[in-house]
Length: 73
Picture 1 (cartoon, helix red, strand yellow):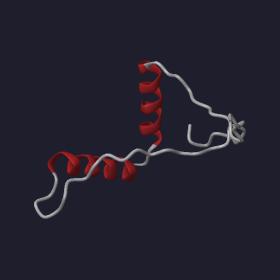
Picture 2 (cartoon, rainbow, N blue to C red):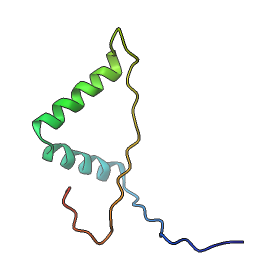
Picture 3 (cartoon, rainbow, N blue to C red):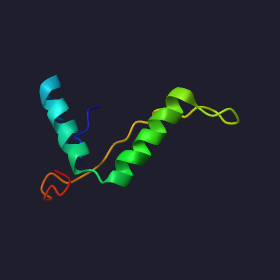
Picture 4 (spheres, helix red, strand yellow):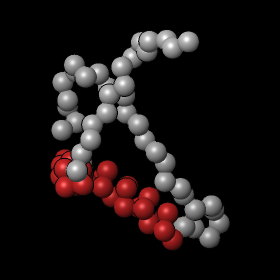
């Protein structure tokens, strides 16, 4: 019994170079505070703290409409 999906599955395939360009654009538009906070988080993942568990990388998924204007780019 195969039912039809209400929400269509949408994904983009990118080359590594395209993904790197998108990443560069993201970080170029990030504020100084956002970049600093991410640097601190990355350092905590690598070096950790003596009195706490090391942080783990979390998967982040953003849901957005295909028809909404892309303000993040």
